[in-house]
Length: 151
Image (spheres, rainbow, N blue to C red):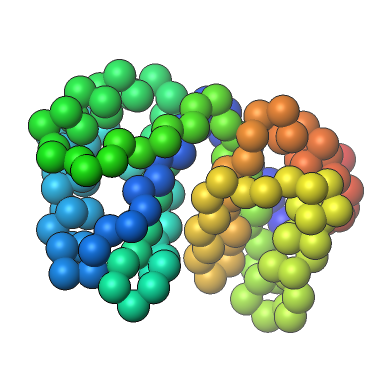
């Protein structure tokens, strides 16, 4: 059985060009500042942009953005993140992801056919989570339900 869960009012906070030698310190300082404002960080995604720098992005509820901006003011950020608010998180949870080849391919092929570019993606053994713009979310959700035989 495949479960599709929709969460609205989600913000994405990306940071790019983090120098490798200060990466852990930077990420910890961002998460500590959020923690001190009692902000719950949801999805976290990290990638290397090159051998000497990386990017990290995470999501939060739109309602905590004012507190997050306050928290960021305590940090010495070289460049503030470009915060994207009012998005939708879609979680596709299925045991089929464990055993079936091509599950993720079918999800991302569907997104590509709709010209939908996820703002943030994370996965687990049996789930794919992605954040997309609200304006694209209803059609994506409708097509995902059709793909996985849900009404």
